[in-house]
Image 1: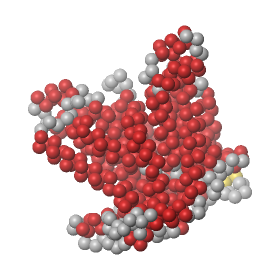
Image 2 (image 1 turned 180 degrees about the horizontal axis):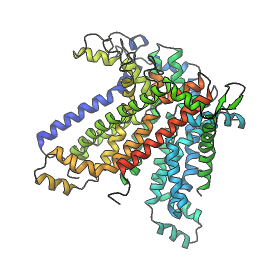
Image 3 (image 1 turned 45 degrees about the vertical axis):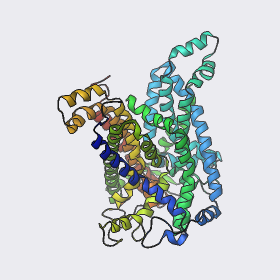
Image 4 (image 1 turned 180 degrees about the vertical axis):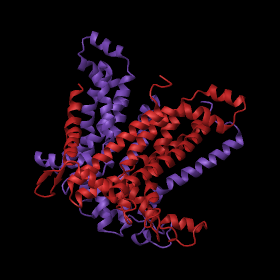
Length: 279
Length: 284
């Protein structure tokens, strides 16, 4: 370990207590959301507010899932996120491979352009996309929404994949070529298996970007392709006081994400810190 | 092999962007689509309106609140993690969860926590004796503090991003350097400001720029908590452009506002890259 580690015993104890306190505070909002979702609807808005409910009930979950469009929206969110992840990977992997292997000025410029794409507010791109998708006859479909979400995840995917390919020595491709592989063959048979962890990271981030996205989903969907974040937002205006169902739905929507984090946490940290630490 | 990705971004980002900027020079009827070229009239109208200048100002304040609080908290926790070494791993995992949660969910959750009478935050503050009654602080309905309150979920969601990035950066700080400074009798604060922070500068720059851009684009988090209210006190540029377009049906004006918003962000980002990062100036 490095020289930042504190060694004094008392000092360490104090720091552990401090860290525990910070963690409890930091974790509290989400734990409170979970606790609330199992309270009775009346208890969720009780005055004074309580941390723990008096009884454990699944009532909120049943009523949230029973609302019109909620189950369909989960399906839409899943379909959209999976589609967007696939499109993003199919486009980003070869692009990043080309950027790292050919090293043309065009590739370097493209990486910067991708960064600029990340700065564009969704509203700026979203509005013209509405009319484009209408003209193409794919308005209000998960496919159209997945394309819009890919505009967000593609730049990041290219950046991540570029870093992962950078870590693989060129000699590996050369060796594959000597053994009779084409460029694409080398990528598919030799290089991709080596960076499979990186592909997983990139896929997670693309999935999350789509799963959590709101503004495009709001602009580009009406009824058929509506995703859960939009349903959650509408919930609020239509059933102003039904906090029980809202917390239940919010908790349900977070399950896949929490599971992903749990299973792939090492990879996620790698992805988050990769570009940054290399500076 | 780059071509498909290039083509995709050109069609689905580049082309819409061009459309959007072009629209800013037209007066456009929302329905029926009658349009007339009016040059920079939309721009002068936007600049002359209090709504636009106010929203620009609020976007800036919001971004500064979010980024500065996140950076301070994030750095503190990252140092805490480093001080405790590998055994803090479980805590690092817990810290990652908010990062994965949808902003809409976070906005909703914090609205619920902050609500005046049955929100748990004021109730807890009352129990520990800081507040007398639970409606003493009206987080989301007092225009003077609402902009700060709507920033809370954003800070909660992404402080961990800064923490993780800075923590990773801290792992690369050479231990001998710190050891040497400590033997020379340097205080922790001196080591922090003279050695650690300068070494971390590229990492800090990346973290601040990414978070700054995202905070300046915040939309869902604010929409779901206050929808821009009370009295417009949380209406940032994203919300204003959205409402100008969708509610008030003025695509020309909205496009002019959006274009200036985008240019402003690009400008700040470029300045930030050169001011904090200084690529190539002292290292590499």
